[in-house]
Length: 140
Image (cartoon, rainbow, N blue to C red):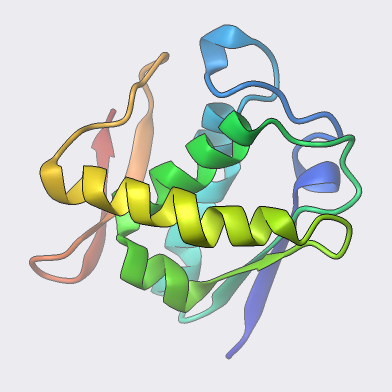
């Protein structure tokens, strides 16, 4: 399967910031809304995998990764994210473990319960409509 690669340090920021847009620059919410959401939706529609490379940044707040990857799970489901997303970090492999064992399952529970993610600025996002298995767009 073909893949697309996002390197957070070079494609978004070498200095990833806080959880929410309203808290400061280069937030996890901004990364999700401005890059990750669209890239993942595109990969689903073109039958590609998405590789997310965490290396070469100045470091991450847990909240940055939790928000970005959590919203991805919320909008596309844990099952689909596990099938299509490859998380890479040679520098800090514990981030991959954190996202797979903590973030992903917790956000799947929120998705199933319908507990919507906080939105600090209105924006459009793509999501997978599980009823008809199609990528659609909505306001958040």
